[in-house]
Image 1 (spheres, rainbow, N blue to C red):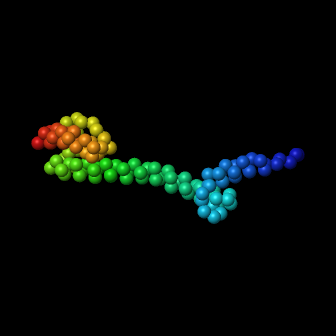
Image 2 (cartoon, rainbow, N blue to C red; image 1 turned 90 degrees about the vertical axis):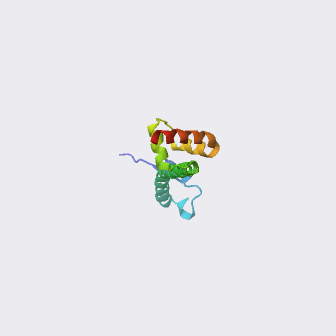
Length: 118
């Protein structure tokens, strides 16, 4: 039986992984075993952080809308309820943008929501 040499495949796999760990500290960038375990953890944290970012931004949008609603004399929860009643389908990102950059349009939306709840 002939001998199979696997050096090329292994080297290619190692180099591909080590290229991803560029910028890491110490052995984490140039020793394959250390680099692999660090990279797996980094990729897992990146995946988790992409999900957390959505949560963080949603809470930011809610606090901006709440601040805009307070200026109009209505609470955030009543405002959202009024939007649902008046069948206005704007997401929180757009509402927060309106509250910051277009306060007069936001005020008209708030008035529409107020009329539906009272």
